[in-house]
Image 1 (spheres, rainbow, N blue to C red):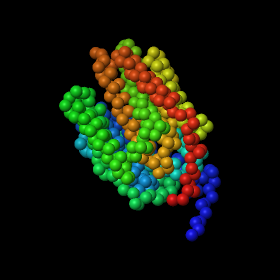
Image 2 (cartoon, rainbow, N blue to C red):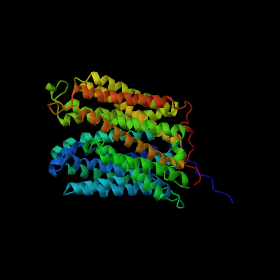
Image 3 (cartoon, rainbow, N blue to C red):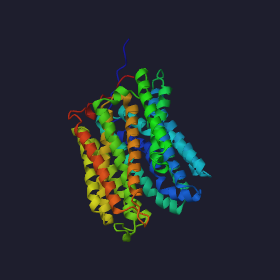
Image 4 (cartoon, rainbow, N blue to C red):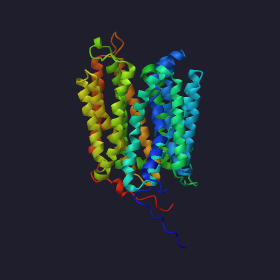
Length: 483
């Protein structure tokens, strides 16, 4: 039996014949709501606390709920994309986001808003699907830069959320954060339906639901323990029990995944030299990227008579982070270009190195808004490099069919790193609060140097990456490969 010849595609077209830039734009718009929703609520927590007469511990569940279900849903979503097709699961995830965001937009109580955040987290596994579509649909020479552009959203979306939240909450109310998010999600759905081509999954594949249950229990134990540790006490029975659950369920999960034919996450894949290094770097970068969210408002909003504060408003603090967003957005695709020429090892070294240098500089030079802009812009460039490089390293280290699941684990590593970073630096600041209600300058400097140490560890790991890694240009052209 003869087979029809594979269609001849231009090096500058996708498998659907659309220009790569058009497809990339659609994927960016589809992925953007996930990072926006991850960060947009933090600046609004005081307003929500007042509106619902809730406690700080109660409103903190709005962040924890999204983080929990997002971490659990991400690898499962990646696996479902391989079974039913990535475009279909992407649309389903966006639809789930619509439901969760609408619940929050009309929520009459804190309980309903927490429910909405849980639902939003169930639709948060979008990035692995997007990376899988890029791997399958883009010309090989455009993969690294496209991954870099999408990876930059991790930083851009978070900072954009912080910048947007202040003025919206002050002038319209916190519910409008979700109405605006609905417009963004709706645009993503429309572009997905119009531009992103359909793909065929593997109907014969299945999900190891027992493994999914164990994975969920492990992640929930770890993330709830981290998020509630300061509130409940790090040595309280509840926190210790949660960490014991995380360790026990995680051990059983690894054992169960090694025994089944089609695991959710192939443990053998995770120990490959490039993959584990990429995940370790993602964890450390996730830690580092959340530290400035705590330190920038401290420096900018502390009163001038506090000793080192700038005495600015919350809105000014948000605007000072705008250059960081722009720098991260530019650096992501640039890291992809470096990847094409030198491999991902170089941007994986340079990115954390820039963050470490920026935070060390800022620890001593923070006496003006200009110093904040300079230090955080340099850190933003480093963040764009590091986020893109970690994802590209993961993609280079796995087969095409493993892309969605492998990048989902990379995303979880970043989630968990961010949880550690927020808690450790938050604990340092909380333990050094002065009579003014703000943390001391010494606590701020300790937070900076924690970030420096973490990024130097990332540089050390990146230096151990083999010099001769497989570049994106050498990846197979999946646009014409047989199913």
